Image (tube, rainbow, N blue to C red):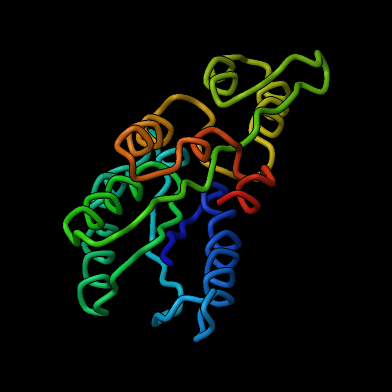
Length: 198
């Protein structure tokens, strides 16, 4: 089981899902007729960079190479350890692409489980729904207090971007490709289905 970790709320749900999947597999290993005979290695993680907090900064230049860093580290792990199967939990936007490329190159049974998106928020003053686009739309306002409120309320919790950006586009593509269960594409990161139905 592999996952990716990074420096934003995009990645906060990954480790728990990796640990739950790993433990479920561990419990199925043994010599009884209903158990699997296999070698299980400890979960491994790659590093990741979030576009969401990098846009418009010098650090954004690290985003695209993050895909290659993920690809190379997953390739190294899969090839060097001789793994015959992989479950990958991915978040944010570049790790899914790098992970998918590495898994396809490795050419062994594998499945990708997306961590899920962040839930939309609600404006505490107007009770209107908010999301990441709300933050973009309000960015030019002179009302600093409103901008701060919208920024804090638009993306509560954790998970990858809630818009149809790279992450969700890639999850849809990976699902249609057959590398991710279709029922796992849309639930938010903190949705209980993510840990009950993986």
